[in-house]
Amino acid sequence: MPSQSVWEGDGVRMNMLKKIICFTGRWGLWTGLLPAWVMGQTIVPSRPAAVDTVAKPAVASVAAASASSAQGLAGVWKGPLSIPGGSLPIAITILQPGANKLIATLDLPAKRLNRIPASVTLRGDTLVFYAATADCRFTCMQGGEGQELRGTWSQPGLRVPLTLRRVADGAAPVLASTKVTPVTATTYHTEQVTLTSQPGNVSLAGTLSIPDGAGPYPAAVLLSDMGSQDRDARQGNYRMFAELAASLARQGIAVLRLDDRGVGQSGGNGNLATTADLVHDAQAALTYLRLRPNLDPARTGFIGHGEGGNVALLAAAQPLPPSFVVTLAAAGIMGMELLANQAEPAATPADTARAGAARRQAWAEVLAKAAKLRTSGSNAAQVETYIAQQRLKIKNEERKQAEATLKFRRTMLEIVRQTANDDQAQAIVVNMLRQRYPDLDPALMRSRATQLTTPWYRYYLKFNPQLTLGDVQCPVLLLNGAEDTEVNATTNMLALDKGLRGNKRVTMRRLPGINHWFQQPAAEQLAAADGSINIVLAPVVSDTIRDWVLQQAGK
Image (cartoon, rainbow, N blue to C red; front, side, top):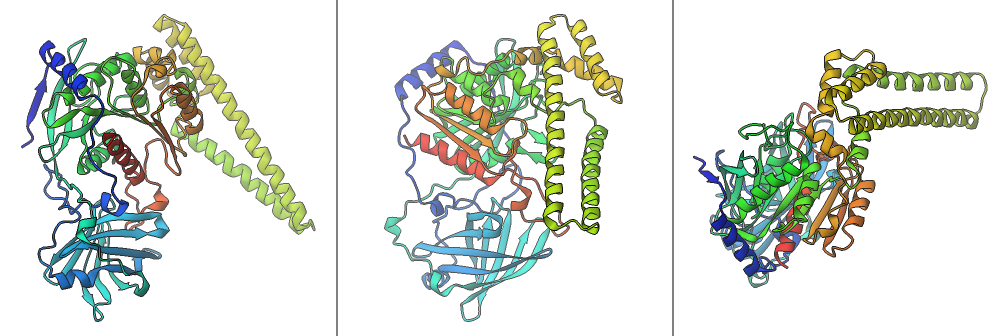
């Protein structure tokens, strides 16, 4: 059963915390830099639910295998993986760091998945590879005079036979065990925790994922994006924070994730909380981690998504700052400008459908006219010129519509910002929405107007993330998806980098193909037998965060 931890915070513990931080100073050496194929190798199939397990260490002894058996498996094995509609090339590289010791990596080049760590288990004559990050398993036996691995590939929604053949010129080297740095692979467990945020005596509930063992481990608090989120940051079937916490905990980083105010088991009212209140919540969570005996108080930080990234940076500018900050699509521009550039929530699915239908109809008319030009004797160059002109015309029209929407949203938000009386502001907003969206349900208009006048919204309309960035001196990792349509990567990352220019420990990365929710692109995932895609956190996100956090821990 999960244990219950409650912390109320008191002066004695706070003084102790200050002494600990002053004494520890900079982080000590926690781990060396390991080769990529060793660093990632930690996971085996999950076991029953209350405790998420990670497998034996990557260089653990393969007890069931003899030295000769292990030696015979080392090498590169390749073959075609059957999927609906075709096949994909797949490769498994098996390395032998020492007698009776095997490690492996999985490659799917067509899906841009490279060097995925996989556990290796020998059970009699059966060999089992398992890659937890891709949730796939290959169970096989050697055949073809030791030159083939024949068995079954399985993953959610797909189970097919697979044969891999040894690549003659790609044999993996047998490494001397003295040259391999051992990987500290861990299992982890979860605890349900409750802490109190002051002022207001707000009770916050959440889940702490802790690597098993004595520790002390580095730790991070996950801070959610704007709006009321549960501890998993759930969006439909996608659970961004739950996946990130599990991934980091498997790699030896403890993670605390909380229900926002008024959500799940947390108290308070999210509609009445401002960004400043969320900073207090973040500080309370960080102090809770620093007082845990198996966590390192000098290696505790924040990982914030969207507004959570700005909350993390605000907290980092205060006394007793975090040891590090990771932002995921944090805002670098004024709050009102960021909100104005986002899609208008008042637009209904019917509005979106009509806009899409209009675009398709306009393009269909262009293609129909192009066909008439061909039949009337126009040459290919003339037809292509016509199509290019019409394409430019449609893009210009869409740009004008986007500019009109932006102007509308800026005007509406500026009115809210300047109108202190909520009733007056709401009446103006409802009237503006009625004129722009005449088919919108009046109840939705009133709901939107009420939302725009909440304490959080009024605070955020005046929020300037630049004001305190100059006081942030801890290491900072800025991450943003190149395909983020809510927080433009270029505009916001450059603004944050400019504000943090006095901090020499800032790293900035723009992730190609990644959206605002940091999901793995569908094109890079293996579809199930019915063609469906299970939306998951992009591995590059958790890998980048893990490597960077551990790198800071080693300084």
